[in-house]
Image: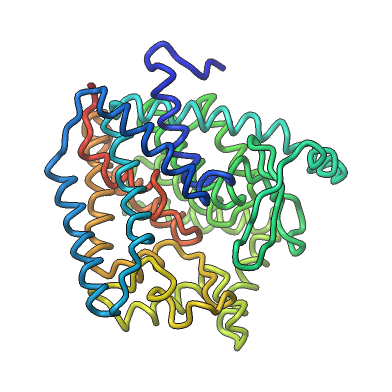
Length: 399
């Protein structure tokens, strides 16, 4: 596998790798100093490659500046460092996507994810058969802070994060280099979609590696996204075809019968969500949705902001504030206006890509739906990579 192809140079790979790392790798996404260093690096690359300030990007910045301005008026709080942190990620995303072409963005992302998928599978498979392998890995690992508030930590090998799931998991799960298995699964789903767009196939060599890696995450959301993706593509986007519905039903039944923990996992989350155990329910996607929507109703236009002081009713209630529904979290933080601006940008980016590659126009809808699906269980959308997806419509296919 040739990581560095002849069509792109090493700087391009560093840019995309950094975009991914600061969107999900321990030691990167949660350390501000590292982000600032990479922001400076991406800025220097951008300056060196005939920079442009696109009008769409200016509008994007101005709208979110206005949102933060109104939030300051509403809450009488001006969290300058939280706001600067958000815009640092926005500018990082913009500098990267303006420094390389969309063609290169897709190719490099697929190659990098293929590399990490392959390495993670090689390192993870022995763990499935012998848990003592984890102890062996820990001898060569580095410790990182998992949760600043409670001070818990985990170990990582960088190429493989040693987060194999909590004590409730029946089987170990593959996190790849990301913070947890579900996050890895989400990025793999995007890689599979980009593989379909670029190479017009799902089941080529790259696609099969991605699918095997997705299976190894044992992520409910990733499994559902993968199943829906394959079925819709294989039925030529004939949404009205009744066979799609039949296949979906039987596919769900088959997976639940073959992998019982998925059905148990969803049932446990639903049951605890409707129970009185609110401290548990806010941890799962269903509970987070319910609690987030209550927060959203209070400030539907302005949003509640990115700082804990305004985002939550009680900024110091660590248990209650641990949410993981990325869709509703973004909606609460930026209100309906910021939410629409962001996700309309994501959809327009997908339309631009599918039109260029002469793909079925419905694949842009599939891509958009898939982003929503994986975002329902992970807080992706404040990370640079996903901001880049919203801004990718401002890029060129060839520089």
